[in-house]
Length: 287
Image (tube, rainbow, N blue to C red; front, side, top):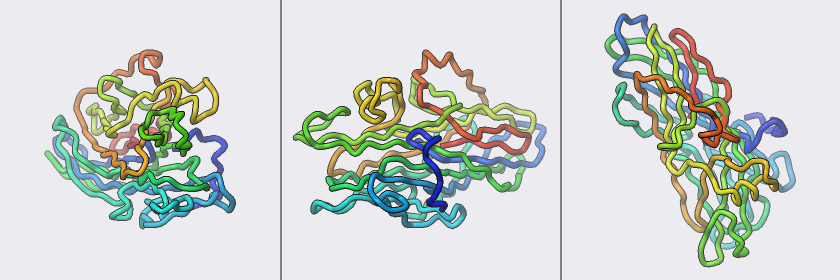
């Protein structure tokens, strides 16, 4: 992990977000029906609003491949413990599985925010790198290639429990707000999924990433995170105070390319997928 990574060029530097997928397969004369995948996730940069190199935010549960923590912790406990954000942290950010083309999405990692009432410092931004290696297993078997990395920018607001509650809440407790920036992917508002068409051994496929709870946030939530009105239509999710908020990430591959509608109809402001590439026998896509 590079603790000195600059955040100035990233907006909630990261989600949503990052996961990169790299694919390699044996040249096939027929479409791929079965795939194996391996997910490796970690926070390659993070910043809080306190002192020190990372503003009072600490990392743990290091992912071996990325040499980056899969769990971030912050805050001075008020009796409930610190708050934290983890992605597959129970297994140090590593997850393996398989899927079938055109079948329902399969679960990968979980993004978990332990939302506790705390005193400062708190998280402000982070960069999540999620690397998914993908290979064909039927009708012919391929081999994994060294994956490329995709980054998700994350902006976070630890709201004051003062009853104003820009993103909702109850009992005087206000929901915290995450904004995910994943430029370049097609956001489908029908199911709040991220879509990326890729080409593999002469065939077109669509990788569909589902993140439970992801969607377009209210104007008041976007305004609160960025302290302006220029980011309305931002995409993310909110979390409930004094709860373990879990967001399941799942992956699906179809053989139907996704046609991205006009950005205005998708409320894509703040949505971006970094480092997208589509190659013969190699592609990258972010979770």
